Length: 128
Image (cartoon, rainbow, N blue to C red; front, side, top):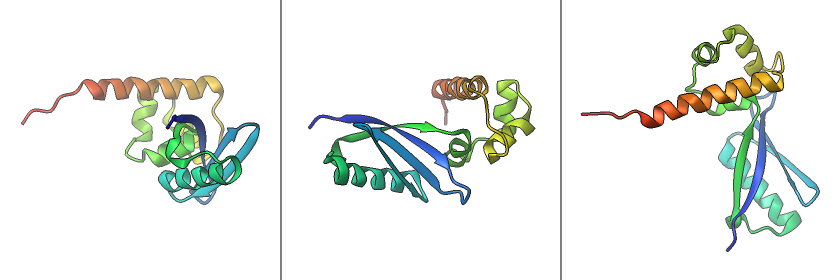
């Protein structure tokens, strides 16, 4: 079975649910759920219903808005991420809450900071 990679855009709703959307063969498919795994399942079922794409063959590439990212990875401390990104923590909190929208440059700055921190974590070793 051939794997089908599909970008899944994930946003946080006002009620803190996850909203997702995919574009497949010029069709926009959307749904919402309490968790990302539930959202993936619902979108896969819709892909089957509308496009007959086997759910077992679908692999999603997650694209998060800033608010959904910090909701999904709630262990991230906003003030620490802001400090590493060289930005005002209050401004990042406004992006996360949805009070303000980040520019493309600011979003890339946050993304690059998170990737850098993840790289550092991958290199860490724990001894017992």
